[in-house]
Image (cartoon, rainbow, N blue to C red; front, top):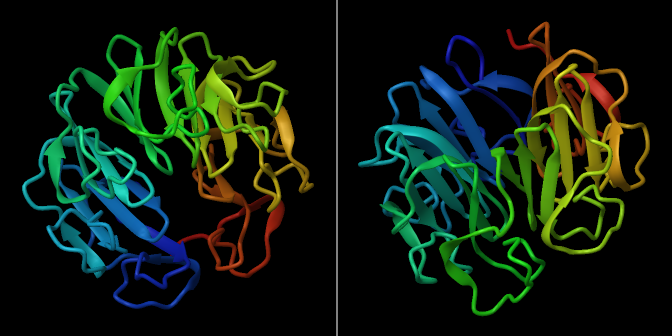
Length: 339
């Protein structure tokens, strides 16, 4: 998304997730036609969403689980508004489902629900948004592969959905039955932001430390152990954090000095350290000392630098890094400038 509210996309496009009305991959950024006044964008798998400045939500791409929120399961090649949903301030895209936080602190959910990710007490999927019952005073949301996360205004974190790898952070790893209603993560407070990978959750606390829970088979919790975190554990040696993001099995964090740190799975170079070995604890991404924002895809990562330029690294087989060519990048490269 550019400062003028336009949206630019690149990479894989087999489900028309680039929003240009085609199914052709893009190796460099191209503008999504007819979509303006956008405040934020979100994507997961082959589905994309845009939050407009007027609080409406627009969606396009894959709709196999009803994640476009239009009452159908028909995929769409260009953006269209999610009916009946207004006053939205934040979105999170999970694996086949979407969470939306409204200005009144309620959370609305739609799409796949086989793991209880919609939080409505059932495992029945739904193609239109409905409020998560009993969940109020929410200030942020995150969505994982099969679980959901909500940060409340008091700094507490609530989770629901699948838990086979401890991704609910409640001290257990029981996967059946799934938790179909939200519950608190015990002992986790003073949180300012949350993120979710495929099977791990991440929280940034007010003191700048990062805590994570769930799957740790690739080191994505950052505690140096590689062992499942049924309860939140602290990332080793990391302080001064201002932002977090989570890929499928890796985590990245921004420090107040503009440096970017990464840990976890690195098979595609998504940690940006020049290698493809996993990291069990935070390590600095070389060459970036002036970052202002970060983001993570499934197997790739992004940083926006002080100049406004975006740098990317990791998997690039279908152009998802926007650098104009294929092949994964184990160190950061600048995304091709938009016209």
